[in-house]
Length: 160
Image 1: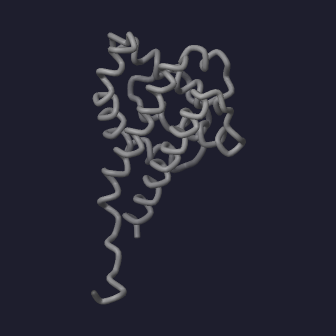
Image 2: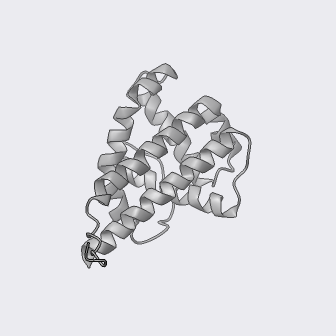
């Protein structure tokens, strides 16, 4: 039963991160998120700074008691996603680790604001908003790939 609950929590983290990716794509096209979208962005904004060992900013109050567990489990997918996007970071002028950390800090601030903070929105800009959406996409799928295989097998109800 514990594995099922853990897998369910990671599926939640993956699906919310995927939805946040979609909201970032909408924001890049000038569409503002609805209330549900703002809550999803803020939830992911609470998750990511806990995943990121290099983040030195202040953390907001935890959205849920499960967040540290989800953050710990998502960490391998988080760093794998950063490595996957290395070329995109360089192409966007983020040459050093500090540049990427600055980008992530702006992303976290933007997400925590539910997509409403104009300063972090302008710090990201359209190109970096697209990179942020791609990063969240890779992260969501990395979490799903890692924990989707741990889901219990579906029983063969048809006997085929």
